[in-house]
Image (cartoon, rainbow, N blue to C red; front, side):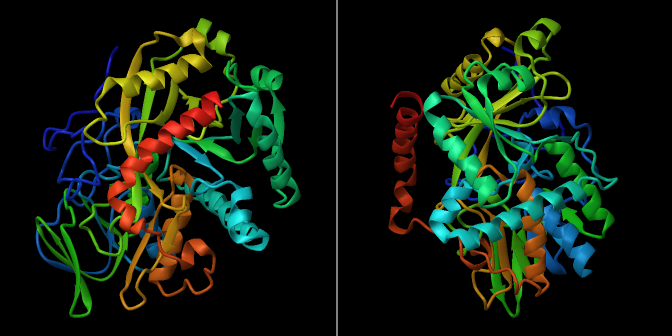
Length: 466
């Protein structure tokens, strides 16, 4: 099996495949990218502003240069006339934003619409649906910018039932989307899935959502970078924030090259948030590893056998879901759960499990060459929903994260909402994701991974056996 590495950059430090955000004091400094398909095929990254080399004073410092941080910088400049300074530990979009599956769906967090109603009631759920729908419109508009060419493949999302037993729940969710939210989802039978979308042997049926899009993850991030810098933002790479202290009316962010003093700070570090970055973000997320592979390009016989007529994102109904699609160059990409700890991430059994998932869906691909294999940390919040929030009204510190694997699309809106809050225009943002902090596990924090181990086994039983 071939394992293709990302483009080597001599000036960067080696990529660490065992990095673990729960254990590491910070993400490092100037490390190379993970060996993803996105980095391997995006071409040379655009220019940034290099490392911080001296002390400086700025209006707004944004920690993290992924989708959220760059969107925040874009909207601070475009809508509020504020030119932000973005601080990145390694290369631009080094974390989640170049390790995801490239799927933009009409969601944020892990909860379904029916679960929104259970938690907050119908009225708030409807308002949250409006927020997510507006976010997708913003995302579509943003990627039309001439600076962003991310191989967008619009056309919807197919939520595929992997067992007969899940079809009733899928049908109920589709009715709810139509009748309560006015959203035109529809149920698709197995025969229609195979005829009009793809011959996924596991598919027992599906729910089609009209909003969904595949994108090239690194090209999207690099496009955001181009646009942010064009609007006047500065993006400093190889500049990890080692400490973040509020004193004398400003934040003092220490980096290896100098101290950045900022009137306000936005944290957009998602699954790569270090425990020591700030007390207000410590242990507010549960970093979860997701594994991804991309095959060699399919030949004509394989294309015909799979009947891959759709290029939209596909997701199955497992709790530990698979996300998959065919790429513009004819390769198949699939991702799902991985190891619990960074130290165990290199264990080949996790790649083996993902290959088993690929073969169950597409038996004809058994033994196919894998050209790219990688993993990355997903920012799952303890209540499965994101937050864009100012945790202390006395301090101008804001954060946006907790997407739970659904941040490709909503991160654009989250960055915009955080920019509004920084500019003092967030008063009308009254949804729970804007008005409450990321919850903590409190005394159970040291035992989170033990709980994760147990839940993975329960999810497997529920999804595959019971």
